[in-house]
Image 1 (tube, rainbow, N blue to C red):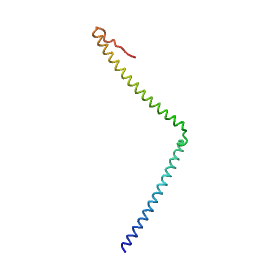
Image 2 (cartoon, helix red, strand yellow; image 1 turned 135 degrees about the vertical axis):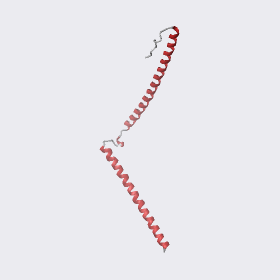
Image 3 (cartoon, rainbow, N blue to C red; image 1 turned 180 degrees about the horizontal axis):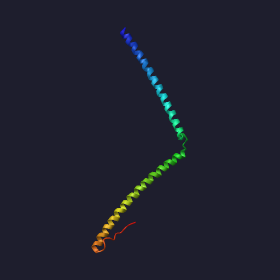
Image 4 (tube, one colour; image 1 turned 30 degrees about the horizontal axis):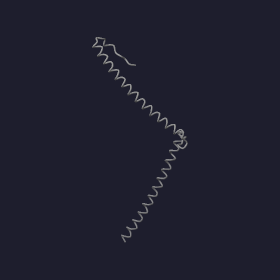
Length: 115
């Protein structure tokens, strides 16, 4: 008798578990649908366009703009490197000319200023 009761309880528990799992899946589906509706409502209330409404030409244009920005950043870095190099060369030339002026008895205050 105890074995039969345990077997019945096990079957009832399995059925209850299946029922709960199914109910959980239904709740998850409802939650997903609610979240989608909430996001769509928020998008509309903020006046944002639907992603499907974006023109492919605009996407191409955005890609080109991104490329131009990356090129600009590279160019600015190159300019910075060249300006640093120019400063170092100017400093070295001033030091060399200062040494030449000292040896020739010239005035130390005379320095070459590039730019």
